[in-house]
Length: 126
Image (tube, rainbow, N blue to C red; front, side, top):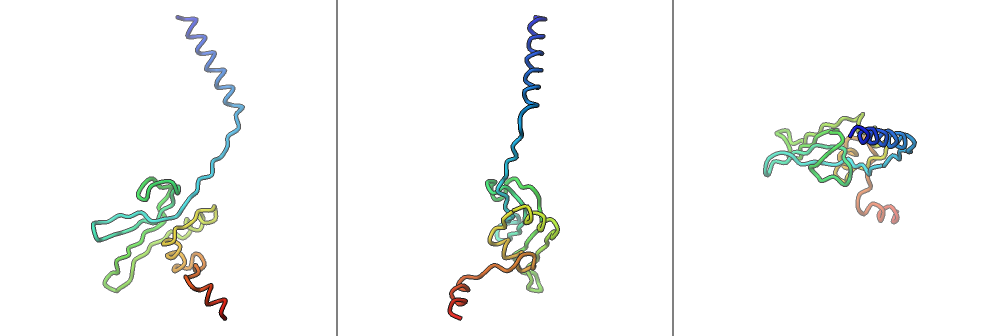
């Protein structure tokens, strides 16, 4: 039994030394900035978060970067809260916003306004 345990120990050490010579390859995830739904029935509330595009809508996320309440308050304004520094960071490393988040960010003047439908046709006519 004693010899067998020594053998196992030697084999483990060999495996560890082999692993040191391996090259690590960094896997690039397709990262998206998108909305996750919260709130009650007929009273939606969204968190703007950064997640792997393969994760489910309300699933695992990397970071929460804001919130969005689409139901107008008494002063008829929709409430939006954004962590602008973190959003700019994620955009700089290649995160792609969803269509709704792109609209929210363009209204907040964080990214340039996305072209609207039919704008290319009217630009060609002029």
